[in-house]
Image 1 (cartoon, rainbow over the protein chains, first blue to last red):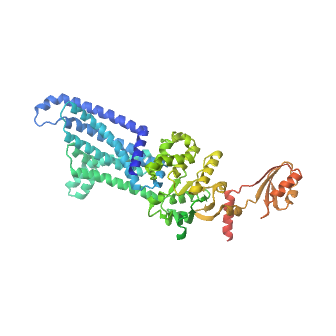
Image 2: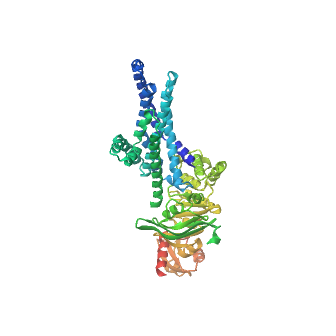
Image 3: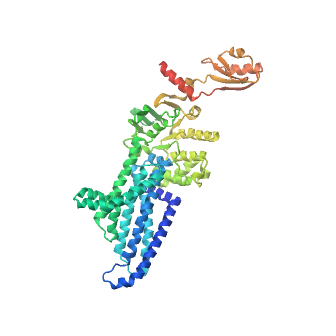
Length: 256
Length: 314
């Protein structure tokens, strides 16, 4: 039943121009960034080869490319997620799901999986660019795996936050802007809050701030570090907002 | 109650719903038997839609219990919802999907086994007259066809109860007739609840009627009882060459005659006397040029006026 909803969402995404526009823009931006970085790398390669223990092509080309993808997802995920609940409620089609023999949890998880599948496609397309370098050089596959895993978890976190905010309103645009604002606020919080809280010895608020700053967790992955603490933080963020979304939709049935 | 369990498809008791301090539905009871078409009648804002949202599990009642085919809707929502087909006031249509795709989705959402999905969709399409539009986008269909897709969506999984919220609103007379005959047909296999604010619609398709007014159930009985109750005792008589009003009033069985225009009269008959036969005979004999004789449609307002007056008297 979850997969029925997930596939419906995925189909609906591809039926709308939005998904194709987002895919195109992302592909163009990543492509440009990737080629630019590769060009820079080729220019400084002679100097690099003389230095001992210098960073390789994966670190200098793949990591920044993935950072671009992360930045674009910050804009793209709220836009893609706004239709999930807000638009269904606006078009009054949500009733079809809520009157079917499906629990609210299944609806939320199904919609989340539909969106995340699309986001994984974006990540896969982005990963193909650095992977194409394998034809001419030795890649650091461990680092690449870390980047892909980090980006996938980050996308899941973004998707969960945006999905929750899509439950709060019937205006798709308000949902998109709200989600974007929330993600941006998380980015700002993540910069400093967790470290400064930790410095004062407030470990619980610091841990909480860390959960609420997904980009901070992503940073460790971008250094090639698959760190259980960062994985836990991103998974917690995702779970937290999915639960909030379920509760929000349930409350709508109770409150009317 | 226990002995009815097999025939009762819906049984709701003491159903109430308040939004804030405003009580929209007040302690109504509702029972529906297999194969019955129940008309749910009331003016706009009477609480019909709220009641239907509660019966379909889209809105939690403030108090009261609902059981669908013996399954408690509040305790086991998923099992109970599988037995319901619901067409809300605004049909929940995905305009970007084709009719076939949409109905397959509806069947899958209602847990129709994969092997039976094709047949379920085909039979729903056949029953709703959608055979020719399966490949069309829903957004491109006319309102009447969209409404039929909405009904097809509600019956695709062969539910025991079909709940239709104002299914004929916004349709043209031809489409209304088609939808009504479809509903009548549904009544054979499923139990149907139909909400409307149009009295003739209830008379045309329902076995039983429940009337809501300001959130209260003010009337619940069979259709024939309702017809007797509101008494279509007003006749409209049209004569090309009418006799003086006094002559008409003297016809046995007629209580009062009120001229509507030169040739049209509104006639109140005496209770238990149908003056129709007498009038047609006299009109032929005396060459009045009869061109119209029909019972005036009692409007829902009249019925409510009657009902509320009735309540005050008792």
